[in-house]
Structures are given as structure tokens and as C-alpha cells.
Length: 84
Image (cartoon, rainbow, N blue to C red; front, side, top):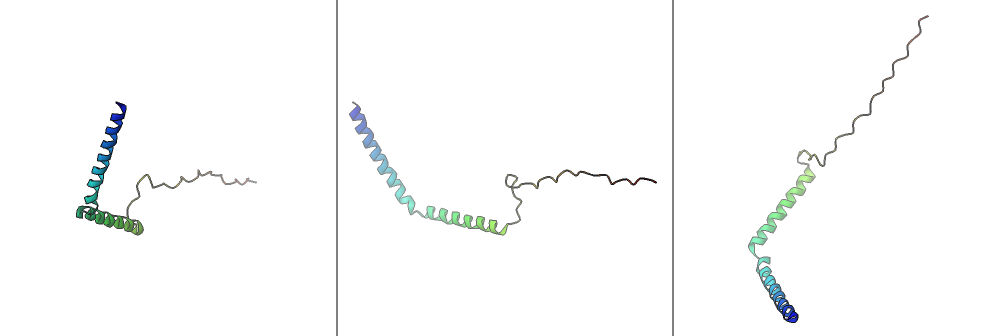
């Protein structure tokens, strides 16, 4: 019984592989996929250009580090002159 199940699973696996490959084939060259790729490349170029230009964007809080606080001021009183 175990051999029959193994054989059945092997056949099923093979059919699944064939069907998957058949489904992938026409999609590779479809105009829809080409259009998506062109839009993706265009958006990537725009994104890279805005990084180069700076685009005047305010950095997000996670990337922006505030300057460290100034060290506490220690005030030393001026020396007092003795009255003669």
C-alpha cells in the first residue's frame, strides 16, 4: 500500500510540475508583464533621482537623529575683589 501511495504522489508531483511550467510560459512574454516591468523601472528611476536631488523632503523620524543636547553649563562666579 505504501508503494502505491508513493507512486501516486510521484505522478501527482510530476503533473503539478508540468502544469506549473505550462502556466509560467505564456506569462513570461505577455504584454501585461512587459508593461509592469516598464512601470517598475520608471518608478525606480524616479526614486533614485529624488534620492540624488534631495527633493526637499523631510527625513522620517526613524532616520533623523536630533543633535545631541549641549553639555550642561557650569557657571563659575567671578572672583570678588577684597575691599581695602
